[in-house]
Image (cartoon, rainbow, N blue to C red; front, side):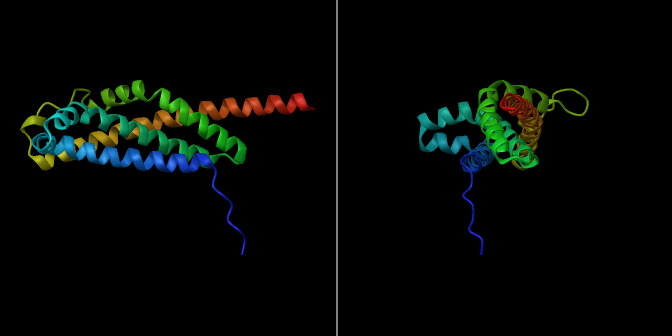
Length: 174
């Protein structure tokens, strides 16, 4: 039997970052959709106040991060060279982290648009809890999809720059 090769470090980091993004996203989306921050406020008022202030931001940032991490994973699978794959994925994670805040805000603004081009949260306060959780879940998925598109663009730009750098280095060696 062939011994298993050790996994590159970027794959472990991506796995843990993805797990964190999914868990924070699910918790904050369910909390935002169901109004569970009221329970937290009852149990611990200062923490509940902070949670209520930041649960929406946690939801959009984790959704965008999840989309970008998924895109970087997909993009890394398309590269043949293991060194270029690791280098491109690592740099893409760093660039994605730097661009997370503006991309999450842009994705959230785009996700609010409905089929007609108008904002869709008009009747959100009047809906039942199940409807609110479903609306928040769809909103999370829409932001994650926009993050996926942005992550693919980031990975493509980084991979192209890395391949050009590698080609230039090979020409210099000749």
